[in-house]
Image 1 (cartoon, helix red, strand yellow):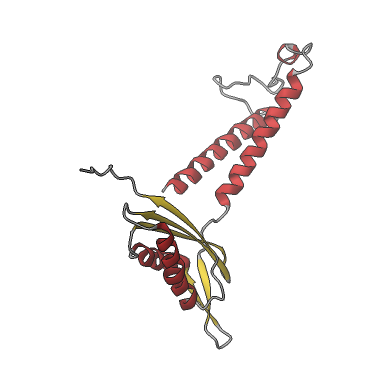
Image 2 (cartoon, one colour):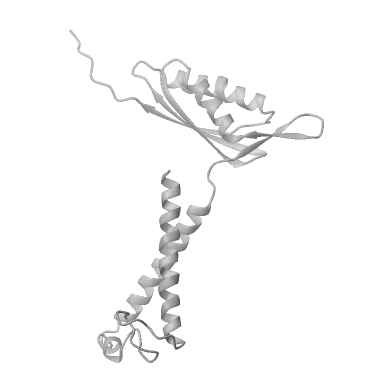
Length: 192
């Protein structure tokens, strides 16, 4: 949901900027602007001589403005590429052994891994995200451990059971994984 809202807001902002730039271009090409518009005529400028000369004696002003605008443009481009980049693996290529391959939905494999990891002793919740390429997936596993869990045992069983089952069932030679462990928040126990 957040990703959709983020992309819609980005699209609306881009549309507003294109419309604003297009309207300035249209006025510059001779289209008659409405009375409430920022520019009065074709000969009107964005920055008047007085505005441009305001800080002319200060040698830092224009390089600072240009530098800040360049940083803003670079950050906007970085943000745009981050929005368009797919982080999750959509499908995993499963070798069938006969020279053909089958495609397994990445979310299905994530769901099975989450269910199996959450069923382990001491694990309250599990989150799994597959990344990488479809013929070489990588797993990011987040485990929330209960108060009585032994972290080393939970990590060992996650690697030896849940991740090994996923690797074997998908016919993968290897399934590198990063496992992040967190403890569930709980109240202190009373000792008598």
